[in-house]
Amino acid sequence: MRAPRPTRRSLIAAVSLATLCGLTACGGGDAAGTATGDDAISVGFSQLGAESGWRTANTESVKASLTEAAGFDLNFVDAQQKQENQIKALRDFVAQDVDVIAFSPVIETGWDEVLQEIKDAGIPVVLVDRTVDTTVEDPYVTWIGADFEQEGRTAGEWVAENAPDAKVFELQGTLGSGAQVDREKGFDAVVGDQVVGKASGNFTRAEGKTAVEAALQTYPETDLIFTHNDDMGLGAVEAIEAAGKTPGEDVRIVSVDGVRDGLQALVDKKFNYVVECNPVFGDQLADLVKKVAAGEDVPKETIVEDEAFDQTTTQADVDARAY
Ligand code: GZL
Image 1 (tube, rainbow, N blue to C red):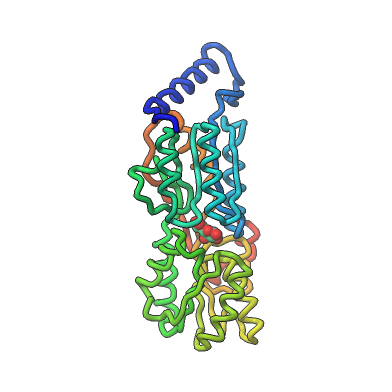
Image 2 (cartoon, rainbow, N blue to C red; image 1 turned 45 degrees about the vertical axis):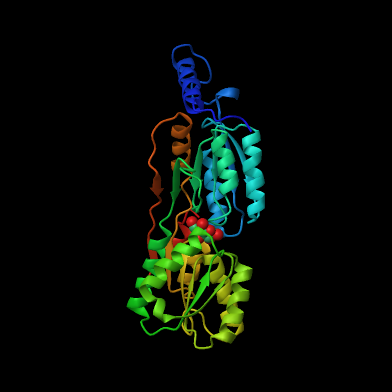
């Protein structure tokens, strides 16, 4: 294990400054500012998986922004929703001595050892999307993502307003993930007394369908499902229809994400309300990574703005969606 290198950031800052001088005063490099070879900011990115439309859109946004032309050397690794794969990738990034490590932790806990190893190596961490719960002091420089608890509250407020007598089944995301923990916290704070049962669909369509097939047997009084993401909600639609019921009517559906398929379900009257969780923040991430690599100050957190959609959403709105 190498001793911590407190001057790492100043070293990167010096290299960045030299590169800038090279590009301006000495005519070195590419006039467009494309980093060449050693000047590029090497980024190790551990993406948790490809479990949902949201994740796919997020990955596309990250890859579209952290490009070679923009000055990055991106090593992007998909963990197939397995924490052990993320931990291996993070250790590989340390061995590669990347300039910055970015990752979206599949669950909040279990990162203490590897985060300490990264800290000891003097590599700054940018936390993306999901959150961590760790004993490591000051484990990351900055986090960019959505306010999951507010998303849950917004969904709960719609239910309180539009379905105050509903018997709610809560279809939860990956148990122990920041998105699941905080969406549940926000929703239950508003209408927890209406929740008759909960189960996880692990943020996937197939597991969401399976969970709702069981829920409709266990909680036959269910007439509203709060799903932590659109993909599980679309699985719920299949389960509700298989049970001979009409989604959006017999069993209303309140969802989170706002991917195109989720908004299409709104237009098709199978979803009733969708709280957006915007995955397209690659440009903001790229800006944060550049500043972190240069040792510049960055905010501890950047909240990605969300909105919400009801059944007044039109087909034109859906067709115009970026993701
Ligand atoms: C939210 C993100 C969640 C999405 C799901 O920012 O972490 O993970 O809501 C995805 O679709 O699986």
